[in-house]
Amino acid sequence: MTSLAEIERDPRWLPHALDMAGGRMQFVKVERAVLAQPAFLADFQPPSAAQEAWVSFDDVKAMRPETGPLHFIFHTAFCRSTLLVRALEIPGVSAGLAEPGILAALAGAGQAGQSLVKPVCDLLSRPWAAGEAVFVKPTNHANMLIPALLAARPDARAVLMTNPLQSFLKAVDKRALIGRRWGRQLYLEMMGYAGMDLGMNGREQFSMTDLQAAGLAWFLSQRMFAALQAGAEGNRLRVLDGDRFDESRAETLEAVLTLADVPFEPEAVKAVVDGPLFRSHAKLGGEFAGDAQAAKPSAAFTQEVEQVGQWLGMIAQQAGVTIPARHTLF
Image 1 (cartoon, rainbow, N blue to C red):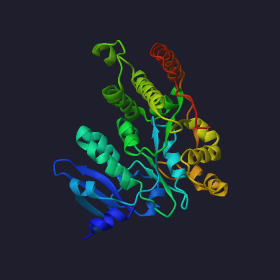
Image 2: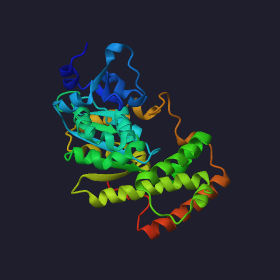
Image 3: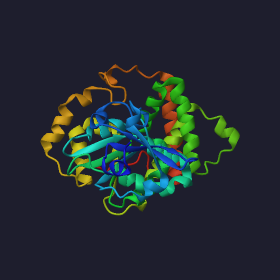
Image 4: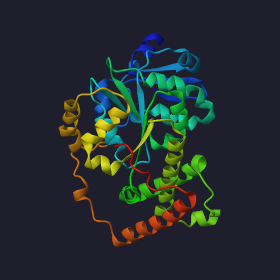
């Protein structure tokens, strides 16, 4: 049986899930090699019972792990954030954690999980090797936790990652029914914690097209990012355009590491950029064909995106929000 001391000490023991009724947290033992694999950490299944353990909330709160530098990649979805955190998995420099399940669990727990945010952040920050920083990319469905995460770790820096509306809606549309349903669900979710009065009654909201709803979710994320930047001190938050990242890969990685005050050698970044990562699918693995082979959008889709963009532009103007959020990382 794994001891509490070992779980506290070893960064491979990641907090993973919550049992709110039982007042306990699940930990799973994840080997370093898993961090570079396509699957999200939230989907990790321990291969044996020896690689999972349940710890009471009281024992979690009592842990005093050896913490290290912790930084975040927050995002609006479909903007290459997964690729970025994979690229920040650079042994000797930093570890990249793609969507640990515990953060989605904390978001789902609401106020009842607030007292666990700081202990979880400290556990996630444990260095995987001497001198390394940790970059965590939560799911965008945990964005409601951003203020709490930043408050829990005042030393953390964060990248707010997004992309233009057209790029976002193209990704939604590419996923057909699942993507369009996801866009509507995201709209409902965003209205729950970052909403605004749009001057529409329930009937009018129901009558929106799928891309209108998804576009509004995107807009509310831009508005939230703007508010976060306005309230941040100093050089703590920077916006990254995901399309710009694709065009300037090395410059982006160097800028993120510099923002976080993480020492690195340019050769280490070059090895990542020139390596296999950017030739494979960040989420699914296998060879990535790239946008060049993507199907050309239909005329109807292009027209609707243009109309949604004009509509959101009017809303943004009235709300005093610049969309998309201006790239400021470099």
